[in-house]
Image (cartoon, rainbow, N blue to C red; front, top):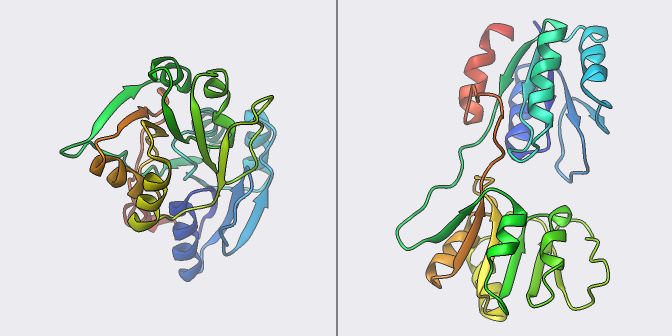
Length: 241
C-alpha cells in the first residue's frame, strides 16, 4: 500500500479522504487555510512554506502519490505541487470539479480577473459579491457601488463603512438564495466559476431575475485534471491501495 498526501480544502477532498479511510489507506490531508470540514486520518494544517519545502516533505515522509484536490482558484498551489512531485519522484494526480456552464436564460459576462469585473460594473449598481473575503479590494475602490458581500471569514473593508457583510458558509439551497435576492434587489452579481453544487443555487436565483452575473474564469496554467469527481479519482488510485 502506497503512502498518499492529499492537498485538501474542498468538498471533494473531504469525500476522497472518507473513501480512502474506508479502504484503510495510508494518507495525510494537508490544509493550507481554515476549514470547518472534518477529515478522517492524519490532518496537517498550515501549508509547507513553498515548493522546495513541499519537495523536502514528500521525500522525508516517503510519500508515493500526491493527490491535488485543492480549490480551482488556488492559482499557485497546483503548479507548484506538480513541480514538487516531479522533483521528489512522486506520482501526481489532480482532482478538479468541472466549472459551471451557462443555462438558458443566464446573463453571464465572462471576465478574467476580479479587477476586470470591478471595472465593467455599471455605475450606481447594487452588487452581490460572492468572491471570498480576500477578493473585495477591487470593488471597495468603486465608491459609486452599493456592495453586499457574502464571506466566511471577516473581510478587511478598509475605510468603507457602507458595505453590507453577510457571514455564512454554504451549502445554500434555492429558497435561501431567493430570500437574499428578494431582500436586496441586486443589479449584478460577481462570482468565481468554482463549480460544484454547494453554491450553485445563487446562479438559479440570478437566472430567475435575469440578473447580470460577472463570472470570473478559472486561472490559466493549471495542471491537467486527471479526475473530475471522486469516483474517477478512486479508480485512478486503485493500483496504490
